[in-house]
Structures are given as structure tokens and as C-alpha cells.
Image (cartoon, rainbow, N blue to C red; front, top):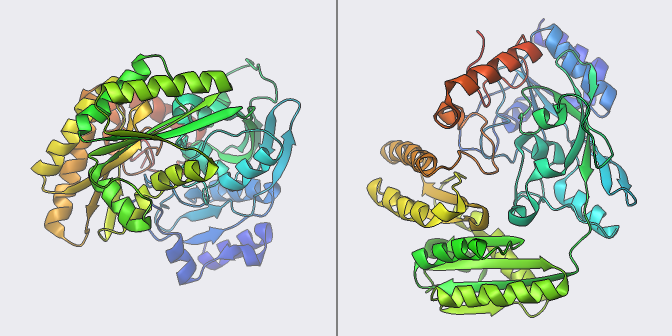
Length: 463
């Protein structure tokens, strides 16, 4: 089918105003937040209702058109980089919160709902949606589910998959498949909901998502611990968990990140500290007081130079703003920012921090490290310039070394950013060839024409 004929077909489905073919539009959707080469799609379509979404999927399958579904494109693994000349389907018009049920603690949403807006709506009802990815101000819930996004509260509350009760999705033929339920318990049939989470648009196209809500904590206490030794801070993380305390958040910043954040906003951080731990406990007021006191003792026992507790909501907000500033602050240092999320068992954080220092020295690179230390999910962030060919080659070698080290320590390729294009080549190192082949067979059955986001997670598949 010619491009003009295709444009007419999509216009019949979604309306001419929702079919984008101008060069500027195609350029705008040729990349996402990962540092990967741009890939120009052939056409962009933005269905405004569920029926149109299903028809787009069906049309793509009938004509063998490669289809990449995209929300805000904030993923850091290339999950929404399109196939050359393929179709990009935007979910940004499917942005309705269909239900917030305060009696049964769930919500029903369309995939294009912005995460932070949803969380605010839920909070206005006196409830909590815990997943809080760093990109929540712009990321969409469909993207969060497709990539199984995490966030600062994942240590205690888990990641997105822990809150997905059901998904209605279009299969590759455009048939609507309903999975899961609005009930707390649901054990009927295969766990298709679980299969869809983290599938990165390779197995189906989300039409509707049912999300679990929880009551908010009655009390919260935030604190910041300063250390003059990175290893002491790392070991403190392990000791807090070993003491059977599970903070809501337990975040880490190294000295380079501290200085960069301070230059960015002037948050009052101690730039002489080798490392900071940002800690928050929540729950029943008495439990919060007890946990906070124990954490202060553990920090001091590991040689913390200072432990500051937020005395009011303003101070608490300042603590977390400093943490959320880490990535944008680092991104200003060099033209290219490569953020990884290799994750290790919590007890291996001290070893991983040593490895990251060694890798930075070996490949002569600047690496700022921050992240969710409480769940072993560090974000070594390489600051570089992709135009420097020799340095860029060292960056690739450093990334290989980071993943090698994480896997050798019993870790995983991704704690929350997904696999996409960027990490597909490493998958066999973590899961082995049998798991990859099993997954490929599954993909071939569900998507025999390989039109759904080809190349993601499993690499090249089918001819």
C-alpha cells in the first residue's frame, strides 16, 4: 500500500487531524529518552478512542506494518524507538481516568493518563498510588506498565507490576482481550495480565488498565545522612535492611552527584560529603518514630558525619527535590548522558560501588552514581560526548563492564527501565539461551508477523 493510501486509511479510522506525516512530526517521534540512533517512522497516528485504537492495530497487521505504541517516550532503554518506516501509534489522546473506586480500592484508566496527574487525583480521594517513577510528571501509565516502571518508593511498596490488577488489550488482530479483575483475588486461567506487564508493546496494545490503590501512611519522617566514606554509606544501606527495617525510600548520592545537584539548585547539600543517604520511613506514627530512631543509630554506628531529620513538610520536600534533581543536574554537565540501572542484591551494594569506581578509572570516564540503594538499584550515569568517537567507544566498553559486574554479583540488567533495544543483546547473559528461545516462540505465536514493536527485548526475530 502506498503512503498516500495508508494515510487515507488511517484518516478514516482516527481522523485526518490525528494522522501525522510531516517531516517535523516524523523526526519528533524518531527517538525516545535512550541514547540511541534515531529511526524515522513512516507515519504517526493518534487514535482518540478505544475503537480507533483497535482498528489501527488490525490495519497494521493486515498490511504487515511494524507498529510501535508510544506514550511520552520517557523510557531509557529504546523501547519506543520505531521500526524504520513503521507506524508510531500515540496514546496521548487516550488519557481518561475512567473510575476511582474508593470502596474497593482500585482505579480504571486509559493508557495515556499522565502518572503524576493520576496520583494527584487518587490523593484527592484520600488514597495512594505508590509507583512514582522519576519521569512521573510526563510519563504515561501505559508506558509505566509496558516498562514495569519503578520509583523512589519501590523499596517498600514495589514497582508497577505490584499494582496492576487487570489489562484489556488488543491482540495483533485487533481483538479486545480482557484480563484480570477488579477483585483482590483473581486466579482464573493463565496470568495474561502478568504477561503483559513489562512486555514493552511486543505482545499486545493496552486499551484499559485496572490499578490497585492503597491507603496512605498516617505518618512520614524523612532524614538525610552524610558520610565521608562511600563504603560506609553503602554498608549502612545493607545494615538498615539487615536490621529488618524497610524504609519507604532509601536513596544514595555520591560526591560528584552531590556537587552537581548543589550547583544546579543550591539545595544546601554538604558538598564535602563523600556520599549522602536520603531516607524516609512511613506507617503508624509509633512505628515511624521507632524505625527513624533505629536508622539514626545505624547511621551513626557506621560513622555518619551528620544525620538531619526534616522538621516540616517544606524541609521534607527540599530533601526529595534534591534527589529528583540528580538526573537533570548531571545531564547539564556534558552533551550526552547515559544512565543505566543495573541492579544488585542489596548486600552487594558496597561491592558494586567499588566496581563502578574501578570502571570509571579504567575507561577514563566521569560517572556520577545515585539511585535507589535500598533495593540495590543504582543509577551509574556516564557523562560524555557522543561526538567524541574514541570516548564513545570507551563508554560502550564501560557499559559492558557495568552489566558484567552486576550479573557476576547476582544482579539483573534492569531494575526499572526495561530492556528495549539498548539491552536486548545482554539478555542471554542473564537468562540463558533457553529462556530467550522460549520467549521468542511465545512471541511468534502471539504475533506471527512480528509487527508489534519488533527488535525490542528479544533482539532480531523472524526475517
